[in-house]
Image (cartoon, rainbow, N blue to C red; front, side):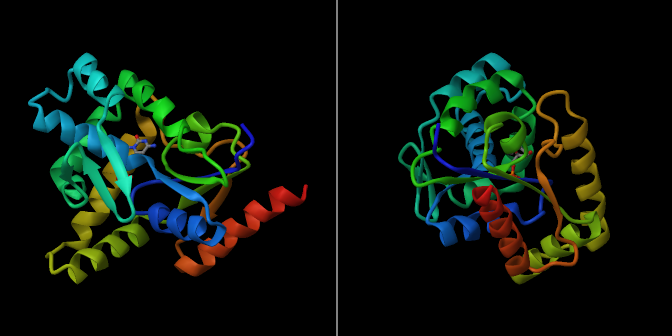
Length: 220
Ligand code: DC
């Protein structure tokens, strides 16, 4: 596989999605939001009345997920679900189905198929460790739980949704604990990943750091 892949992994609300999109835009690369695939799997299972702990049934749905990504929009069969997959319920469901090894296996080939010319920026939790171990540039994006909670707080307030900062910090820590401790594909930097702490950086600075890292791998 000669298509260049850049992986951007990290905990929730670390800004991975935005960074991956901007980097892909700058390079003219495709982008894979792998978390959306777990969210789509959860939504599909909920809609079909399938128990989210039923590994065999959920992985069968994941293997044939009728999902389609169009610019700025996500479709599940004939329904546009761009907003629906961002709900709390679906987020919770995604974290449950993501813990099932058979589901992760069922989504593996589909994720790898996104590596198409001229290149791919893939964001998630295990892009550099499991899905694209041979990626040319790997980044692990972190930020303190407080900084991530504050970003999420601002997003919610801007959308007119009330939020509690202390509760968000607690949620962030609980999710980090769950993501890093799970048995299958736990959240951790790949050995060859550049670990970037974005606590004190803005989006543009992080994008530039990722691009510098990518270009440096091309020079060697
Ligand atoms: O990044 P996100 O919040 O959209 O991810 C949704 C869920 O899927 C989250 O619980 C983590 C999980 N996930 C995963 O296990 N592996 C990935 N590559 C991406 C997401």
